[in-house]
Length: 121
Image 1: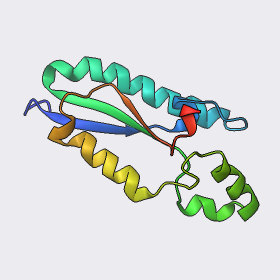
Image 2: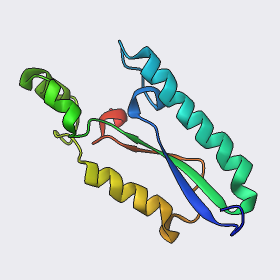
Image 3: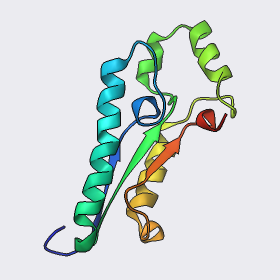
């Protein structure tokens, strides 16, 4: 990227840590908050080289990790989301592709929160 003077990097942060705290996940939250801090600093550091650096912070996403969550607990989590569902991996991937595209060419140092509206409450 430095040779071509253009490019895009999308870091994976998380709603937990980069946006809100989650009890019982202190280490995870600290790591994800660090990812967003890295994103902001790197965006400033590499902007002059034409490299855009952003982060994506997913909320509850329907992945294999949810297989270990009881139906009751999963429903309690979904009830806190205004869109009343978990997101999909494809929805996250679509956002990453967009951030890497020319359509997002004036965006750098940002954290795109994809959480079904959880954090706007």
